[in-house]
Image 1: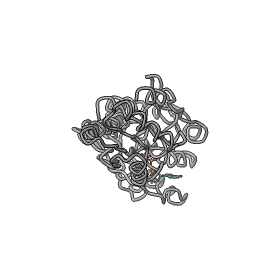
Image 2 (image 1 turned 180 degrees about the vertical axis):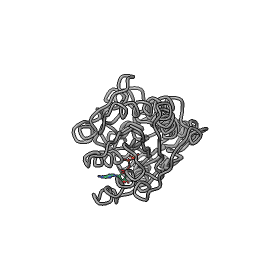
Image 3 (image 1 turned 180 degrees about the horizontal axis):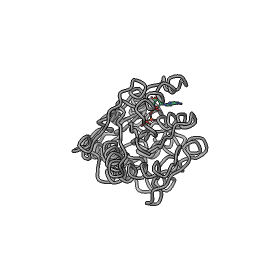
Image 4 (image 1 turned 60 degrees about the horizontal axis):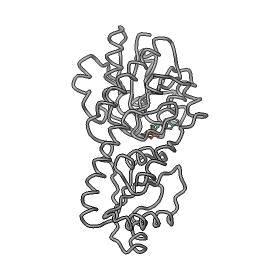
Length: 319
Ligand code: ATP
């Protein structure tokens, strides 16, 4: 293999830059030319393709976001659009593509692979919602940002004897919420994987108050319910001031922490190694500390992420 392309796609995640850096440096060390595709699949279709050198990835290991940019580009679901994208790659002589992104980006890579174009998926998303890997790039950094915010909410909630609801990202995966709940010592955790029972929540809040707790933090994943409406109902039921905080996009930003830099570096190197071995339509993961790869189609269609029941239990026991 002589020329490899790389793009980042979907929601940005801290650690995407170190992943790009690892791909670029591994390619160059093996005499492979590497091309950066700007703005995800949108840029692939618009031919925003630039050759990368060693220096292109200088000073990016510590930078959040992705210097290649990313985009949502629903048009990529159309076969004709993908065909034009493949033509762009072929025009530059690029023989294979590394896609760093979430499950939506994997769908794009899967479809390119099905059209005969070799792709490798690298899991880059804060959500940790991809099967076949224990952790996605960006998850740990995002988690730390959330825990920092929860700590701050705890200070003010405690001072005011307030109930705080914190809405956390994750799409339809409760991992960020669950881990943040354990690490931030929240009083209650609500995740999409478990049915939400408002009576149980109210009972736990009453229990906490009886124990003498001056604050209560409720960690909840986005899309489960309207958190402002929930705050209003809790305030009515408990007579205690209740406020909802939607953490929003601050969760995505910031320098990648060491764990994500190491993970991204390992995954970036591994993706190029797989392409050099002639592999295609694979997605990379880390399982039990080791680099693994799975069939991308199998990963998207059949594999399921196990829910961390142990952490869910833990958060309920430790409250
Ligand atoms: P995150 O979960 O972190 O937001 P993601 O990769 O899941 O990341 P999406 O917006 O779902 O983010 O997907 C990114 C892009 O992948 C889409 O904008 C689109 O260009 C492409 N894509 C998504 N689904 C498909 C599909 N079914 N076929 C082809 N391309 C797709």
